Length: 158
Image (cartoon, rainbow, N blue to C red; front, side, top):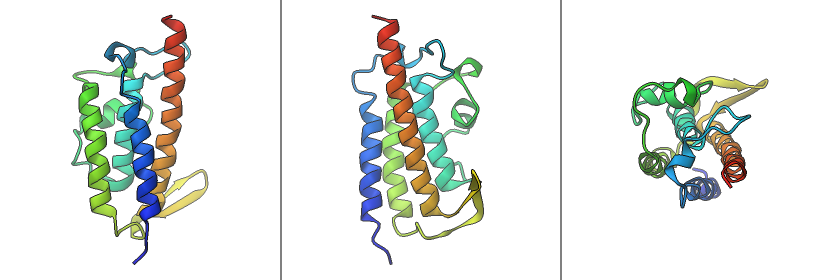
């Protein structure tokens, strides 16, 4: 057995930063795509949720609506959205629930081998732990994008 408390502590930190984005965020701002961008804040939050779900559960995408893959999956954008998009409150609840569920499900399984390696930029990830750490890096990148979007919106709407 390994002690991965430090990993779960990082998860709490990163997800806490993500959820803090939602505080005092006007709903109408979440849906604006500033000039020069292809996505908005709502998309980035849904994308974080969807990608982490895929990283940890693979094809077993049963904890989130199937529509999230077409709304928030890699290569998607709000300009192509069709149908209902989840409100920010739902995304916030799902982000919090996902954190607790992943911690519960994978607490002792980070060394578990993936059914097949995931290759990114000539690097193979072969365990759930490697995928999880990648998902935290990915989430951090999108937190940065969200902060950039917020700055662009403040400039555009001031």
